[in-house]
Amino acid sequence: MTRSWILTYFCTDVAGIQSAVSTFIYEAGGFIEESKAHSDPAANRFFSRIVFRSGSDGAFDFEGFEKGFGELADKFEMEWSVVDADRRASAVIAVSKFGHCLNDLLHRWKNGALPIDIRAIISNHEAMREMSEWYGIPYHYIPISKQTKLESETEFYRITKEYDAELVVLARYMQILSDGLAAKLSGRCINIHHSFLPSFKGAKPYHQAHERGVKLIGATAHYVTTDLDEGPIIEQDVERVDHSLAPNQLVEVGRDIEARVLSRAVKWHASNRVILNGDKTIVFK
Image (cartoon, rainbow, N blue to C red; front, side, top):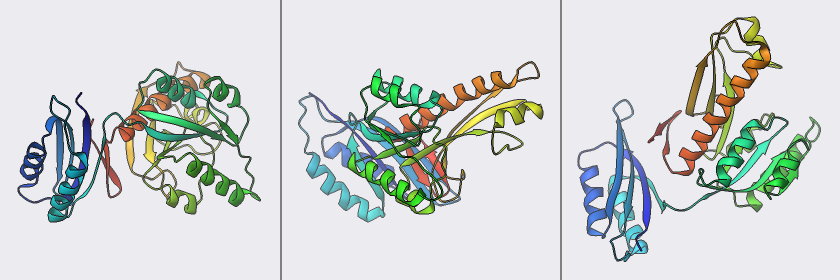
């Protein structure tokens, strides 16, 4: 039985990288199924994602591959990883009162459309407990106030460690993470928020958008950083709207966009299709 692996790497862009990597995979007994690459001239960086499989007899020395590729990676000063293509990233989802993104993620996870293993749900409200329990997922209620924020975030992080979460998804979790927690979850915490021009902050953003006659509404999924809503963007989408839509209809359209944008971002991250490139991302779709 054959098995497949996903190799991702990035390094300074110099001649011969692709040739060296492809030759190494071939000589190690691997067969390349998919290969994508991107050269960033401004940063002088080269990025690549390769899916390869073992031969028809299934024989493949994975440990030997890792050791040998490590030596090649050192030559090109690469940052790299190689994972089983069938692995499912362990995930913890955080949510508040609005369940549209959570419901979408749970449905896609249940039918096998997302390569993740949802191990727990964290919330600062009890509103999503019934949904969580219906799917058989542990639900952790962590109330938060200004006085208890530090203790609440300590418990939040403890739970992510308890479930060995490789990915934390803020599925409309209406709390701003402290710089300390954001730093601890760097590169593995994804947030979703609405995208408007002009920007509307605070309560009822869709109602504000309606009052201003906005013609496009959208959503952005990005990695969480210490800069609020300014982390590297993974995915965005928009939909055209007009004067005929009432505020509640804008909310419905917006929530649908948020759900699909977040699910795509989660899927691409869990499939090792996203590589950080400074303040932006390379996404091999």
